[in-house]
Image (cartoon, rainbow, N blue to C red; front, side, top):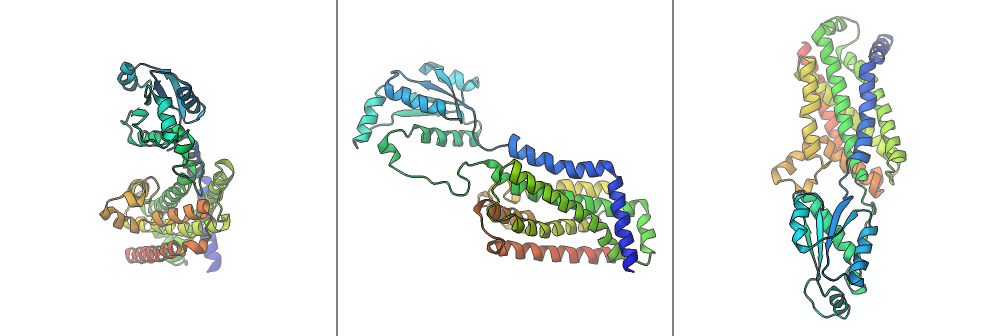
Length: 364
């Protein structure tokens, strides 16, 4: 019996390896997504064009503009007149305009002396893109805090990600997305293909029990997913520079559990649908939207409406992404995210149990 089971595993493995297009997609998509989100897609504010209106180009104004020019987040587009502000913003020549008061230097001196004064700089920002406008405003305000009295008003410390690199936040999210899509898609399409072409009935008359046939089909995909996992972790650590302060082994062990959960989801999908196209659509589309919107990958869970915050609790990627972020960036150990691990384990056992029961019921 063990020999028959091993033969099924070997057969499925050879079948997968012979399918060059599938192997290319499975191995290439994770790399492309990691590079894309790590380098091309970024929530950081960069190269914001800034123009300056300064009736009196005093030493203080030139000093502030110099600090602005040397900052990598902004591109100084020169001095303009007050009447050109609207046209510059509408034409896209500038994303923000700084308007200095005529008595800017004297106002700074009064501020240093503790004398209350009116605002010295007016910031006009193109808010058609809300996120960029908000980030640019905060960055510009920090750049303009040049005097000692202004700087002494508060002190800021950025913990865990002082460079505020968006790749650090994106990598755990991409891992949560890739494993669900690839594992669930591969498993569901593979099993449904056997049913669709009629070979599942042939397999079922073999001495191997139906449940073992399912596991024989899942084992090769689990092995491939492990290779994808190692590839992603190497890219994250050595290409994107994600710190992984909590240790790579903790992330790896949690990811293995998440892989099993993803394969179980694929098995569940295969018990629901009867065509490869339906399995592909459910695995690739229906699962993608909850991951993108409700897992914390792109938007903080705290910002969701109350109903969707409750719904997000049943999205496995939420618990995986949260745990991996803490281990990679905050440097906590896997013990510190035990709650996430228990939730993922319960989800895995539940989904796998339901899937196997539905699979057996369907065969009977």
